[in-house]
Image (cartoon, rainbow, N blue to C red; front, side):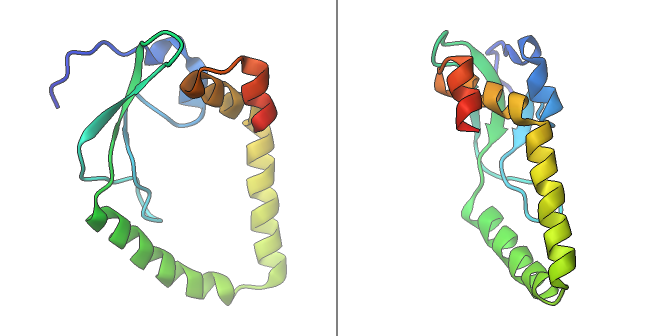
Length: 121
């Protein structure tokens, strides 16, 4: 991909903590992050600086994700309540662990003050 816009990704270490990089695929299909569309640049609305790029998803990408979700749904529905509860507990713990990073991301992308971004998480 050829784009000469300088990215400011490295100024924000919390982005890497969230598993993001300078270029990101925009569709998770249940197995991998993979998208086939055009590249879009995420802009900091407070400064106008380019932060990172994301490849947009196509209809085909979404159809693949939905098909994989439907297949996984059968397995999920067949699991025990205890198992599903444990998975949800672990997801909650991970969100709590990353709350500050998610709040910082929200603040960065929406141009909000940091306390407001963290409060929304």
